[in-house]
Length: 165
Image (tube, rainbow, N blue to C red; front, side, top):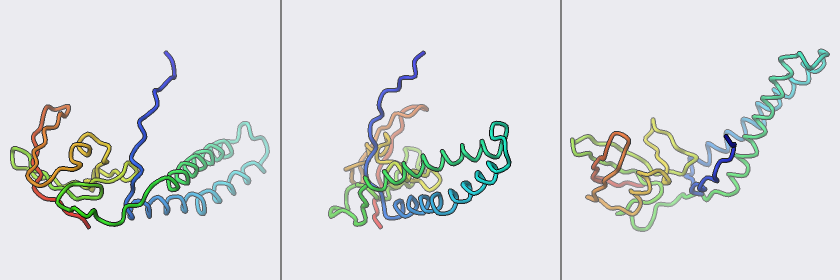
């Protein structure tokens, strides 16, 4: 068995103002708050002597590597994303940042917001524009019909409302 993984398709490089703010807050929290605390605890653990059997030292170093990895990712990601702050000119169609209300055949209504891959939150109804549903929604207008294949079977949806902030 090999460890080879095919390269992943790059995600969309768009983010909302709220998403950028959340990523910047996480970066600040990791770099200015957590990392200094963990560094201090590692140096205190290192001063105790034998590091090979010192659990505080070992786990502290592991946590530092995790923090550094996430900081590198966030720094790079914030440089490459494009913040979309204004709604599109044609608000009758679904584009990035739209709030979309869908109705199923059985009458159930669901509201989604199309966001970038960094902002996905199923509890809030935020779905990625790269997701199967997100890609099918892009460019559609009110009363458009969507047939989406899900693991539970094919589902029919109708677009009943489109809103932008």
